[in-house]
Image (cartoon, rainbow, N blue to C red; front, side, top):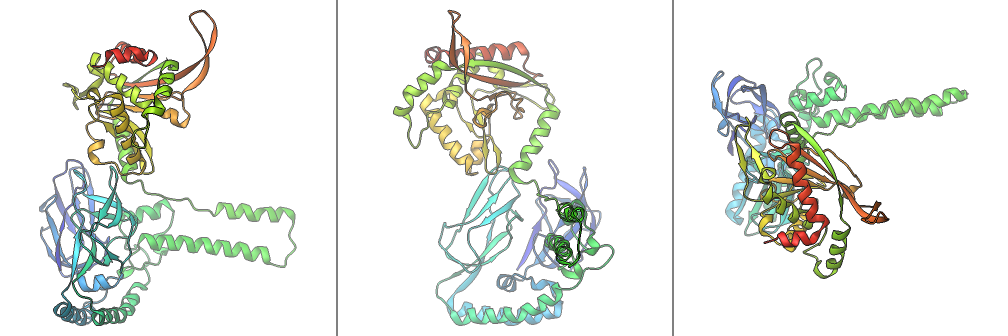
Length: 541
């Protein structure tokens, strides 16, 4: 099967790039992650890796040409029958060996198709979010050889926004999983191969198995080729990993073609070095030599210093959060405003209503009251619900009150928002909060629930904090952090000390749009609605 490699997004706003150098030529056999070309954008020099193994059949651009993003860069022939049967790509063998192995397999497949109507189909990873071109393979929910039903979950993948579950579109047997756990899968590229058959054919399956078994030794011979000394073959990601671990690539035995080094090779090499250190320490301990107490204390100290740091890539939601927070702080002049709320009456009101109105679908927490009262205050101070353009020349007052809530999910910080709070009752807001909280904590928030927020609430008090300086969720202009609810002594109107339910709130505002007086007056109105719930009820429409 010949497949075009589509040039992916290689930078925000980049639609084309210059082809600086081809690192392969037509007819070359390439392996997964092997560098194919160097391209130059208006920002940096980028190296394009191969997403799968095969034989390069056509290069669509000449050196110096302008390549288009989302257009074919090169074409590669994928040995479908052999790739499906064996984890090792036969494309890594010499051309003659490949021809010998492929011929009987192809013949066997043809005979099988004529007698049992067996077809192997590639499942292409569909669009799973606006602007998403790749995702991380978090977990395979099936294995090669498993029978699956239509709509059965096949894999969990992580985009830069949420965890998404990929279902099977047809029933059949999983022939090949094209990615390993932790790898980046490309949108519109094959995710897995499925064998769809109308009638079983045991003899054909046996023949395929035997053919692959004969092909395996040849692949293993190639893979055990030692790495070349000096400048080793490795992708940029592998070189970064080696540098971070302070490992000389020339000392790492590579298992790829021509000794190419992969991440697994570095991990294996690092573990081997640790094992050697542990073995040496054991020999010293068992040697029949009388040692002093000072010498004995040096052994564990030596062992501790040999421990290696753990390097973990920042991907998915965490990577997006890091990028957005840096952009927010660097482009928005933040200022902080703090206030103390006495929520004694609101707590009593909520307690009296909780049993009657709470269910599995609705949890009547304090948050619905915070959101609804905030929406009422936003109607009086629309600038708090506005957004400013990039060069700060236009201010857009948002008509919808889409109030976001920061959720500490298992995949990172997510901020889903409740749409149109101004038109919902407190119970409707509570139902939406319950739904989004459950979805966010499982990492399965729909992309639509993460878009179009206008102002955000971060409930740090759920984890025990009191005061914070939250970072604005750009392009919004304000965010508030709720501290934990505390029972503290306060003076009443008669000068008597009594226990009250106190919460600290911390605002961060965009000082290009909001001044201190505006946020103080807005916060005072919000505080009035919360401290005196009857005022909130009277203000509702």
